[in-house]
Image (cartoon, rainbow, N blue to C red; front, top):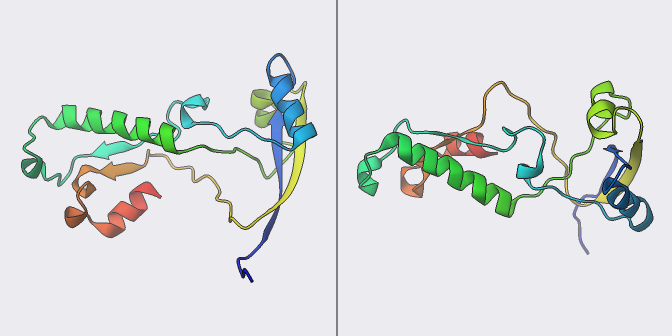
Length: 155
């Protein structure tokens, strides 16, 4: 017998029904299938982007010396990996947010779906901060890693 907890959620999805969106919105309603987007499909170009911090980077261990090029390469690599391995379902806890209606429901002319579902997975709220998450290049090699810093930087 599985003792995993069950979570019941009631969340909302603002949707357009114009153009191609009509098909995808209809698929949610008729088939219960919902789309998870890759971060590169988001409106905000900074969503899910890491800033690579070079402080304490063991560059000599890698035979590397061009700090800025390494940082830029690392940020692009993390972005590529994130888009390959991550997909996100964006939902809202509220159905009456003016900005959400404006941005995701064709300027208040479309719909907001009320979704109630049960899952064994605990959902996570987006953490908004004034600074982009940082990945410390010094943490690339596990033996050099500051584990608390690593955990706080990527989770």
